[in-house]
Amino acid sequence: MNDFRPYRTPQRLAGGSFDGVVRTGNRPAARKPSAQVRTHNQQSTLEGFRRREGFNGLSTMQLRTSSAAAVRQDPVGEIPRQPKADLPGGPSRVATAHKPRHKKRKLATRFMSVIVFGVIVLGGVLAGKGYIAVNSVFRGGGDAPALAEDVDPATLSGEGDGRVNILMLGKGSEGHDGADLTDTILVASIDPINKKASILSIPRDLWVKNPAGGHSKINAVYAATKSKHLNADSSPEQIEEASREGISALEGTIEETMGIPIHYYTVLDFIAFQQAINTVGGVDLTISPDDAAGIVRETLWDELTGENYTLDVQPGENHFDGQRALMYARSRHASARGDFDRTERQRKIILALKDKVLSAGTYGNPVKISQLMNDFGSHMTSNLGLREVLRIYELGSAIDTATINSVGLADPPNVLVRTDMIDGQSVVRPMAGLSDYSEIQSFVRNTLKDGYLQKESADIAVYNGTNINGLAGQRADDLRSYGYGITTVANAPGGGDYGSTILVDLTAGEKKYTRHYLENRLGVTAVDSLPDGVTETSGADFVIILGQNEANR
Image (tube, rainbow, N blue to C red; front, side, top):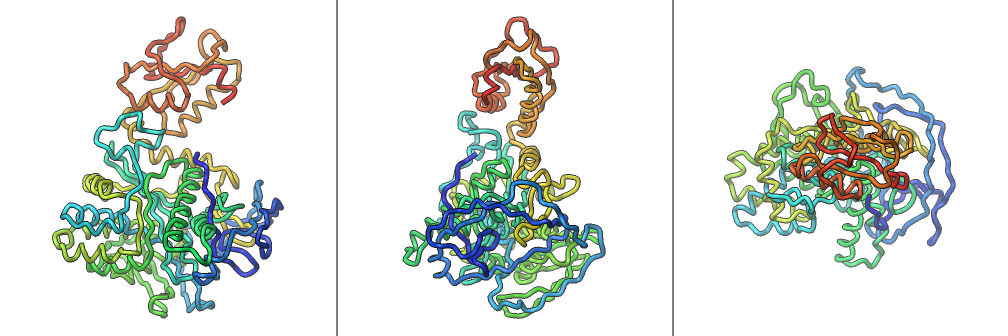
């Protein structure tokens, strides 16, 4: 995948650490990353999600003047786990939150991107009505080939470009501790070909290689990179560039771990969320009695008011103003599955806001939609351009809200992550191993399947034309992980005497997108007929005969 640019460092914890970024002591100015590896004989299960929040943030100036510190390299092997008491299916808990012990404890605003769909809709509305103020939000710079009406296969870099993937980041606002920690990380994935959409939730505590150095929770990647590019004298232009570096770093990390391309991004803070909900007059949700994720009773600390807020959402019709919606999207302690139930609530708010924005009372009121864009103002940035916004708005209008799929990495039966303890902090890591993302990548690629691969639904036969035992099976598994349909895996007729891989297109070019993807992946040009002595009786659309050159791939 993509190489990463340098990243900045997040704010410092007591003891010389940053939230999610593991360090050893207070760093000297030019200290190199430590190669020391330490493990902790601790385990946790997926469900408890008890973690150390405690990000003790610095002031804005302190953050800018801090530079990249040495980051301890993380364990590579398995980490023994320690059971936790809170398991799924247990009794519902009523959580009570008192005023934080630390006056500046960060507001847990992990969800601000929940309104990005609504923002895109608004952008489409305003652009269609001739409002040009949306340029301050939608600045352009991203690119997704699949947004075009008639896509040339040559414009597609690889599997996954048959969708439009928008990275949606939610963070705190300026002046709050940990303002640059992206505690909400979602990917809105749109399939323009088959008129489908999904929302992928990425756990904020996912343990990853941080391009700024060492390993950290994924929510610290943006902060670490941005900080690394700042100093006490940074100009507004330099701060903006540092933010772009941070976003680029996080995009690359997500592409590496999830195995999908990221085409656009949006970054939003909680102030815009609360104001937008209030501007449209609130949103309404119907909670069913069996909706464990939707039913919440919890007391949370509201830093905006400086008071506790009691959230009580029960089955039936529920109206949410900005404050209540904010608390609903933040709540996690009263839910059996913690962060994962919270993600489901965030999805509900997204869809409710989308419906409210498209309602006659909002859509037909230019004053209200103009006010909504003002709500976003400096609280949101995006590399979507107006043309892309209009196209996504058009596509989104054709997608039934009820069909939008919510995708998580811990939703049964596909439980792909669990929690562990690393250096005293609770992190999320792949079930397959600390740095083994292969199962996650295969799941995400097949769940967010390339639109062209899905539409063409080609059958592929893979034959081993080498003396390398099991090669056809290995390559077939690789192709399956990208969403290809493999119908045959066998040895090639005549044995292992093929010097180079051969790709045969038996569709007469009818399935041009699959052909293009396979040519790129195999590094060959497809031919239209089988080699002499080879017959294909399985009815495959494409035949791959692996050659000896595969030994070096």
